[in-house]
Image (cartoon, rainbow, N blue to C red; front, side, top):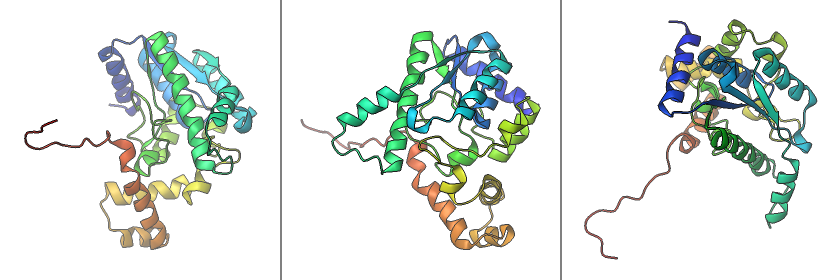
Length: 259
């Protein structure tokens, strides 16, 4: 069975199980959200898929906004644009220790605002939030907990980025969007490669050898021509982020308890 058919069936089943009307997808103008939107249309039909474009003043990227609109129009889906600049500014004012120079917490705040917006549309319109994370990002924890990680289903969560690129061609995503450098858009100038220290092609090669082929780090380093330190760094990034993919731990109470 073709991959896109399997994913479309998965999306359709999850929407039926939840008795939802359809899905809402955050459209960033990048490859992952474009592919997810296309697969959702394949599964549900364009009338049951809503796109949400969420720019913000400091991270605004006109090309990404145009590409997000282009994907929505190409797929024939309805979409909304909601600029959350004022929300972000007001939240900053309420945080006594807020520091704009601390890029990660400020960027994660933006991601969590986007999650809140997606879930408003979800609740209001009886939709599920279709996440756009892929397997490469999930394995190394390259997403914001309760931000872009806060979703109802992950249609491409079992596909490495390199596989998503191949699938993108099959589902008709424009080549200039496929080849565009990946960025979560959490701060100006942010790129995935700059943060991860390797490109996705190298990252996927390492991840596949580690987790699919079950090879030892030293062998992976030798076969990929990366330093052992870099391979170990990738492993540690994944290990330290496992909490992102698990439910919060619950304190277990043993025996009878008197309160």
